[in-house]
Length: 473
Image (cartoon, rainbow, N blue to C red; front, side, top):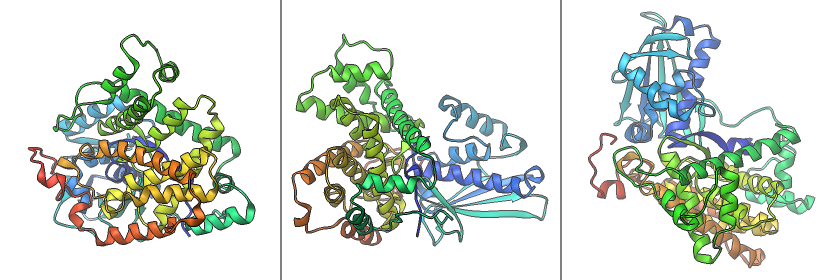
């Protein structure tokens, strides 16, 4: 059984894509670390990277090339200064040299050493990449990795998520989770908490989850205070800045995130305004994501705005919200994301956008239902309702960029999550005709039936019908 922590589902990193940016970045880090562990790093004379399938087709638009350069250089997405990224990449491109893990300087030409094989795919997963390191004229060290969604990376022939950790409540399906809740009378977040204690202490779990929320809040704040156009060539206008300014009014003043939240709480709280704030939060996060900013993978970067939008909806418009409520939300949402990953996929290259926005909406719906005091059955029902209305959603990024329609889809996912939670709270789950496991199974079957061109290739849907003149695709 695959063992997944909530901190595997929620990861702090750099946009714009968990599968095409975060995954290749981590793969490059793993390859360089493996070279060092085997004593090969100082012997390395040349490194080449080969990108296959979806990574090749939309890799430039998703920043895959940049991520690999940063990973080979030894930078980590968690703490790299965002503003330093363009300069690092430009230096490598201009000087045709790269310093592996910050220590070993070798020649590197981004044209000949980063190879996009758009007409080739590896059989295991559409997001494949191979690294080759020449130690001398004859000896080559080679490794192939797969970015399987949500920033998860596995090496060829490696089994994902298998560790020696023994969980008191191992969960593979929502039915198993439901059974644990029934027999122990524990809520979902309490079951997850007991499992998380096998990885971290109580203090570490609480601190880690609140750090995740703080990263989401920081990202939303940054997005709401960044104006202009997104990079990439589509000239997409940033809208969160404009909406934030209109909702707060010209006379609103604040100096930091805490004062910003207070300003929002003091603003108009009618239905229309709150609905606009939800969209604003989601737009803000994904505008940061689209511009190579720091976000929380939740469970992916392309869907990073859904959960922060719903969490900030709770945080801003429920004045009595406490840290424990945030922790409960994230534990519940994280477990739902884990079940989707085990039973289906959280990779758009495997399942289309239903695997990203759909899963994040289901996670957020479950978290909100838990916060509202729903039973474990209502929480699972909320997740099912949210996903049911994302089934079949394709991934068709225009220009291979995580901008159109990706950014707006986060607003839709957030609103659907809130609606799903409220419907579940007013329903008797015993009357439900569709279980969460059934909708997960259906999602996977839909993913398998879906034409490959609708799976993050920029070869179908809007990506095909909107004419753009970009080098990315």
